[in-house]
Amino acid sequence: NEGVDGFSWMTLSDIMFVRQNTFDYSSATDVSLISAYNNSVRASSVSNLQSEDVILIGRVTKDSDTGSSSVETLGVAKIQSVDVANGKLWFNLKVIKSEF
View 1 (cartoon, rainbow, N blue to C red):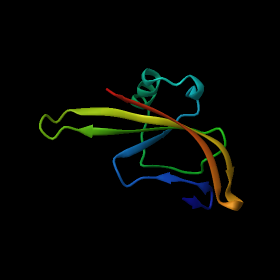
View 2: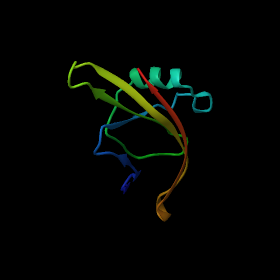
View 3: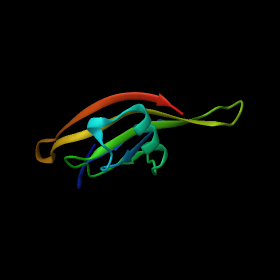
């Protein structure tokens, strides 16, 4: 999505995002990703994406039988370049699936 302030990512599913620019994208592992995701405030959207932003991607699922919740991380994205004028956003994505 492209808005007044730039690009936004949003979801209408159970996927949630975390902007975590202190996260070490280049050294990301399943352990570091799940730890950062668990200790952050998750949202269904991130707005005004900028170059060098790091976005953690995951979801929390709830077992309908037991009521227990589990966190599943799906990956981490690093925004490389934003060109709002031309409607272009470049990013790298590391798919790191883990469950806790």
